[in-house]
Structure formats: C-alpha cells, structure tokens
Image (cartoon, rainbow, N blue to C red; front, side):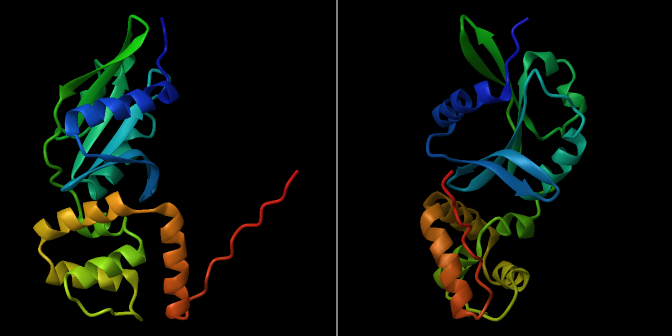
Length: 209
C-alpha cells in the first residue's frame, strides 16, 4: 500500500484550496495555545485552521489539537489519508470540515468529504492575539482609537473588542495577515519596542562554517 506523507500533501493541497476559495494566503506551522497548527488559511473575512493527518500519522495528539484549533479559528479542516477515513469523525468536532487525499494514477486527488460550518467555540480574543503588536496598532488607527502605548497587548485587544464590531474585525484581521511582510514586520516590531522603551531582541548572529 502506497503511503501518502505530510510533505507530499502540502503544496498540492494549497493549489486545491486556492481553486476552491480564490483569494487566500497560506501560513505554515503557527503556534496556537499548546499546539501548532499545520496550516492557517487566510480568506478575506475569516481564518481557517487546517490539521494534516497523513497515512503515517496517529490520533495521539488530536484531541488537544482540536481543542486549540477551536479556540482560534473561524473554520477548521482536517486533511486525511485514506487510512483515517473510517474513524476520523470520532476524533473531531462536528463542525470541522474533512478533506480526503489519495494517490490516483500517480497524482494526489483531493475531495471535500465534509464542508466546515462556523466554529461556535472560537474566541475572538484568541484570534486577535495572532496579530503582532504593530498590526494591532494599525487596526487601532483604522478605527480612530487611542494608542494605549504603555498598555499590554491583552489590554489593547480588550479595548479593540469594546470599540470595534466583530464584523469589521473579521475583515481587518484578514487584511493585516494578507499584507504581512515578514521582513518589514520584524523592523516594525523593533521600532515599536524602541519607541516604547521596551527591550529589543538581539538578532541571532550567523557564522559561516
């Protein structure tokens, strides 16, 4: 029996998702609570958490992963190899979507076995925490909020939730993640820390072998 592995699934999966959803941005390996999301998919008004369970994977950590995914994302998918097709529903929430993947004529074939419905357990505070501080600052600016420069990230998040509708936030969070430039954001974070007299993180020195 041919085994389909995680590394084989990723790039073809992203093409499949783009075909279904159109405008997307993919972020890989994001820490959420005590778990790590395999994939975060950004669409214009929502975030999707995607857990990959290839034929080589087990359900050992899935219960904890499901709990953490349910805290952060508007919708969730599990992507499974055929080995898991019979029992996956026993291990995930009923609102999760299921995508199956199998090898057909030397190509991976994806099929949406179950479309996800909106996650009733998502915590908008946790979702906002996925943004970096300069991105939260930009949301504050867009909504003409005070800067709260000396306040904690959690304080700022709570103020945003008091002053901005969840419907607006859905689009604004997605837009920040669509626009995120990993090189530029690192510089913005350092600048933010300097402006607010916070300790700046030292860059790791690279040594040539």
